[in-house]
Length: 154
Image (cartoon, rainbow, N blue to C red; front, side, top):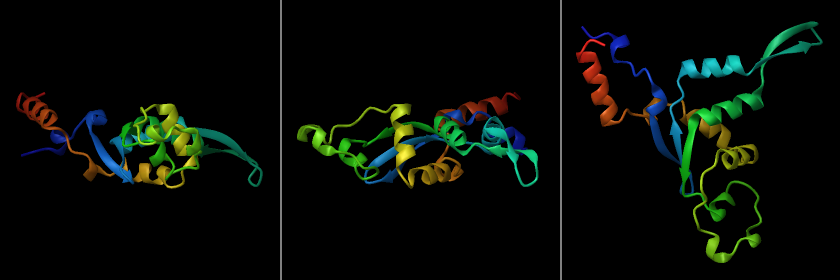
């Protein structure tokens, strides 16, 4: 008899997938499990005074949660160029040489965070895609490790 506890992937950090956001922009995401989101929520909860009830109540700091979630979920990107960024946020392409308009931009967490702050639909897309388990499958190597460890009884 197979137990779900025996077959569940314990370390989801290795569950990554490249998913097209739009216009050839591909974001490499890491699966964010429910337990990780719960931990993030606790980390991002602050006590705020509610003048109506005159009591301090816990509230999630939305900006902090978005930053923490993004760091956990985003691994990298492909297809991000000055021209493709212009489809997400207002940029002045006249400051870029014509031959550099389609040159790939290197991924940095800071640049991604800046785009997140300024692009409308990226935040919602990211939070929907990073928790959708159908987007992520363990690699063959991970599946083999899991099957070997379950066969050996560990």
